Length: 170
Image (cartoon, rainbow, N blue to C red; front, side, top):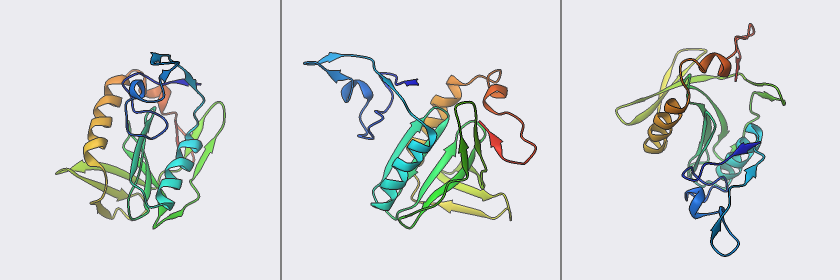
C-alpha cells in the first residue's frame, strides 16, 4: 500500500499534482487516500499508453515510466540507472519482472544516463549506446533529483539486494 504525496504527480496519469486532481473530494475538501499500486500495474498502464501512441510519464517509488508518440515505452530504475523497454512501436513487450509481496526482481537490459539533455541507453549485452531523442528528459531529470533526495546512501542496500543470477532485486 503506497500513499501518494500531495505534490507528487497524480496516479491517474492526468499530469496534474495529486492535490489538484484526485485528492479533491467531497466539495473541495482534500483527503489523503491510500492507493494500492504495483510495479506490474504501472507497467501495464504505460504499455496501454504506448499501444495508443500517447506520450505519458509517471513516477512510482524509485521507478520512472514513460511512453512516446511512436509507441515505445520504458521502465527506468532511478537509483542505479537501469532500464528495460516494455513496449516497441505500439506493441507491448513481456516485461522481465517477477513481483511478489516480498521482492521485485527485474532483469534489466540497459543502463541509462542523461547526456547533453538527451537520454543515452547502453545495452548490457553488446555495450552499444543509443540516444532516445523522444524521451522526456526534462521530467526524467527532475524525477532523478527528487528520488535521489528521498533515498539516502544508507537506504540503498535495502533497495538493491545482491542476486547471483545477474538480475537486480529491488
